[in-house]
Length: 428
Ligand SMILES: *Cc1c(COP(=O)(O)O)cnc(C)c1O
Image (cartoon, rainbow, N blue to C red; front, side, top):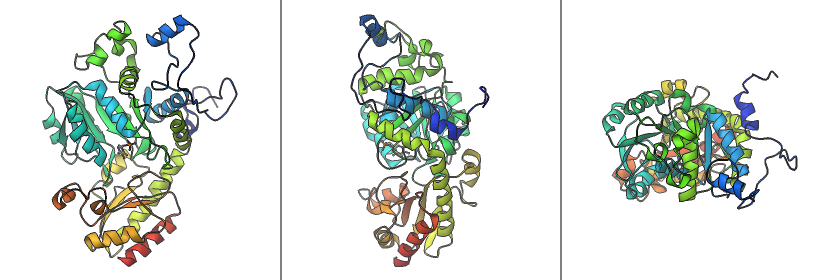
């Protein structure tokens, strides 16, 4: 293999960031289950604390196991650096903490994971970070929401729960005109299906809990720095453009160039807010990442087969899956995720609430739970579970009407997945 050959995605998924352990020769990345690291001497300690040298100090801020995960996901997304954190929600918190001051605004798509809508509407408001909602079906709503206080735009590439695809390039153009970074939650697509940085995004976040970890066994999140945003062009982002008193007046945006954002999130977000990922979870998620391309292709192929089956079933009133020709997002899916539209889809079952409850109670292979991105096929009836505290009107507005069923299609045999749905639909 020639030296200048750029490795492909599947090769990076297995190798990026990892070398045999220098001390033991261990080929798999070890779990560095330690809280802290011994300094060589006092000068070494001072240079680590002063950001004059890179090295390990304390596992709240970094870990050699997580460092491999960070390098791997940065390589898969085409970013310059990454920061692993405790969960997808922690990633969103740490990113906005680096960008927002009390009284600032950010614009977010309405079409988001329900937990993100709660986080933005309630907890972030109590920090004085004010969300302005926009609609991915009408890009002008993003343009109209821009104000002098806007510090960022936040969207999902493929949006949970409807499996709708966002026009990343169009929203990146709005962000560019406004002079603010575009943050894309790429959890549902993963970099195997879509790389938002290639379409003008500046920062990518993930819930690693879902498809990248992929096995339903560990919570984690990550922030990927695209490396292109100019943080020191204005004084809008003081964390990056103003001298940091605790680091001897260092200006992070100048000192760390195209990975300054990842550094700012680490040395301020992780240091002060504290949502560190456990090295054990980083190990499990790294193991999952090695098979990401194989699993995502299988998830997408299975989901397409299931969507085709459902779209012909007499008791199914509608199917929303961007991978189906004729779906309103099919054209966007062909552009942004041509290898497949992912694992998550929704459909309507005839007979409303009673039929939905029967369906989730009668499946055998599917697990009835509130998660996505497991190897196993998962099902939920949001009306009677995740959205049951809302009024019927609120449930409908959130896309969780009484007939809506959400699937996260697993990597079992497609024929078995379809047979399970078939017997459960027959019981409705
Ligand atoms: C699950 C999820 C999150 C939150 O991630 P956690 O790891 O559960 O904190 C954020 N965004 C999307 C799209 C998700 O599916």
